[in-house]
Amino acid sequence: MELHLILLFMIFAAVVAVEAKDLLSSLIGLSAAGLGLSLAFLILKAPSLAITQLVVEILCVIILIHATVNKDLPFIADGRWLFNTVSTFFFISLFLTIAFFAIRELPAFGSPLMSISGDYIASGEEKTGSANLVSAITLGFRSFDVLAETAVFLTAVIGVLAISRRMGKINAK
Image 1 (tube, rainbow, N blue to C red):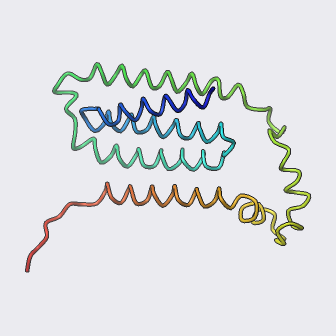
Image 2 (cartoon, rainbow, N blue to C red; image 1 turned 180 degrees about the horizontal axis):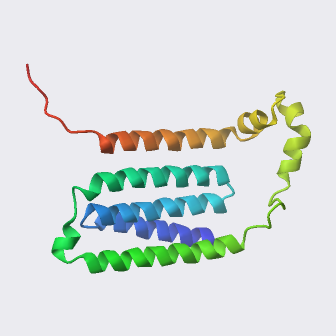
Image 3 (cartoon, rainbow, N blue to C red; image 1 turned 90 degrees about the vertical axis):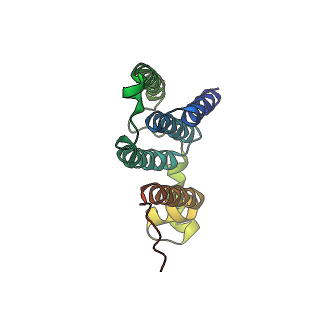
């Protein structure tokens, strides 16, 4: 049920990002969709992907805000500050509400949510042949997770490079 609510939230945020009139509102909608994706990864028991998504999302949002603030500020001149302020407070209150319920569901510190960690410690070296337990878990048991994290990171780097590139004139010689 929680996953369905988060997916609906992501769809709503994506529609806001696409339909917004100015770049800053669109960026806020995109950030909300990324936050929803991070929460969905947490629900699907992929915390490393959730952390990667959140870090990449924060870095991309900082770079995109820096790129858009100087170029697009029509909400001040057009009187759209009320819509932007209301939508910002709406997304912040929605985030804090979801975060409150998510944090209440976390297990107590020191008590693991899943018992798989004991299996990793007991038979990690035997199953993978690696003396380093961290490498055994990362490359042996969680290789698809690492591949997905690498794909998210590569996509973020390509997106940042595509957005922050300078449009120059082609000198024909």
